[in-house]
Amino acid sequence: MRSETGDAPPLNPNGDPVALLESVRRALETAALPLELPGAAAARLYVGNALAQLDDYVLPRYRSLDAPLLAVVGGSTGAGKSTLVNALVGHPVTRAGAIRPTTRQPILLHHPEDRSWFADQRVLPNLSRITASVVDPSGPQRPAAAVGTGDTAGAEPEPGAVTSLVMLGDDVVPRGVAVLDAPDIDSISDDNRRLAGQLLAAADLWLFVTTANRYADAVPWKLLLEAAARDITVAVVLDRVPEGVGDEVEADLRGLLERQGLGGAKVFVIPESPLDELGMLPADLVLPIRDWLEEIAADATSRAEIARRTLNGAVKALGRRISDIAKAEVAQQRAGERLAADVKNAYDDAAIRVLDSTKDGTLLRGEVLARWQDFVGTGEFFRAVESNVGRLRDRIGAFMTGKPAPAVKVESAIESGLQAVIVDEAAKAAEHADQRWRSDPAGRQLLGGDDLARTSKDLPERVAVEIRGWQSDLMELIRTEGQDKRFRARMLSFGVNGLGVALMIVVFASTAGLTGLEVGIAGGSAVVGQKLLEAIFGEDAVRRLAERARKNLKVRCESILTSESQRFLTRLDVLQAGSDKNLDRYAAALQKLGERA
Image (tube, rainbow, N blue to C red):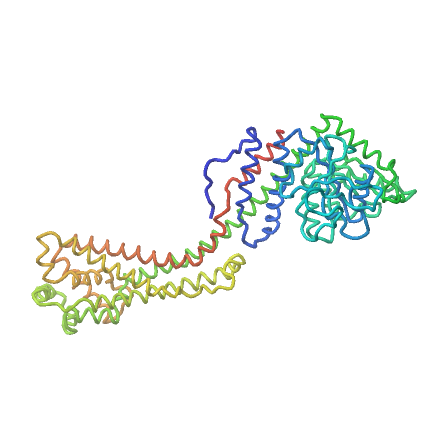
């Protein structure tokens, strides 16, 4: 099932990190996880998340290590994210309200001189850019107005999946750190939740907003634990804390963070406070957060440390995810190999049974035997052969001086009998393979509603064509062997077709599986055919001709049955497109890259 890669991918973590990461991305794009095996759905999600993080964060950050940091403000519904962002810049720039979901379109606040870092889609390349300007804060509260896009200033975002990012330059934002207001992580909108996760994965640092009565909720903590696994810099804003319980709630939150590996996270507490007529918090409540961001922005070393730590953590986490994906893909390949083996065994067994029937005398029963008798003489002749095989030499001499009957009826009888055997065995193989696949969840999925327990409609005709081709090859063997002048006259006295039929009888003749009178008749048939051929070509030549004829028949039978098995096996082609055998090696290389960096 596995596809080979072309050139050896750059797996050396001490080499160019971007080249390694681009190879990892190509490998993830071809990951094949089509079968609904245990863990497959999670692995597909890992693939999508890994590709998104490579595109949105890891590759852009490696390519621009000195780019401004991206601080994503995230949190639960109604936690006050937009209100916090507005307070940080000192005037309304995002929409805050009671209608859910609120933050439908992400807004990226940046210093005007940092615009070039984000305008070229260095990060979040799947989101188009909309340039915006600050609305008049004295007018009705609206989101930032889009400029040059054809949108009406302050227009409501369209429903559905968000495909754009609003860029808003503001001198209040410190140079070196951009702030992105993300949708709710627990939004009622599936699109909003996905986008929130994507934006948080693209962050250099998180400003996580929660409330005094929701800081222990499961959804935020799932993301916070992911942050711990990625070693990302996190600051938690505990918003709307009632008077008199601030110290108690803050202590409990810090304890939770410590126990979950986030003891280094900064915690900012914002007490419950009324908003002004513009929906703004008092500026002094968010001053510690603003000072913290400005401190980071002013210190290039601090920014580089945050970027390095987050990037290394993301790369190591990516390595762990890819290791999980590699295991899931191995499980897919093994399931495919198991299903392929079921089909191969069914059709290999069918080929063996067909070839056994050509050696055990089965095909010399009935119509074939009757036509052969008609061809070489009367029934009385063969009864005489049965009782006195010693007289055969004299009979052969007499036989060859006469004019043999046409061989075409024997050929037709052989074709019909052999065709029936092959089609019957192919039907048994199809039924067996179908049963094995239906007993396997992956096989049932691949079969869908199709019934492959029956043979292809055109199988009888294809089998007949192969048998006629085999018979034609036998005639050509006889012609080739008879080119010697010593054999030509004797061969022509009997005819190429007649000798070809005799060779077919020799190929099929053995007494295994026959009883009573059939043994003598079949044995006599074999002796007659073989002695006729030996009288013309010699014993060694007949042995060689018979062996070549058997091999030719074997190849053709196996070809037919292999072709029939493709009805099953082509359904496994969905596993062929992926299966980069280097996925597990990429995982190890990324772990080393994260540790080295």
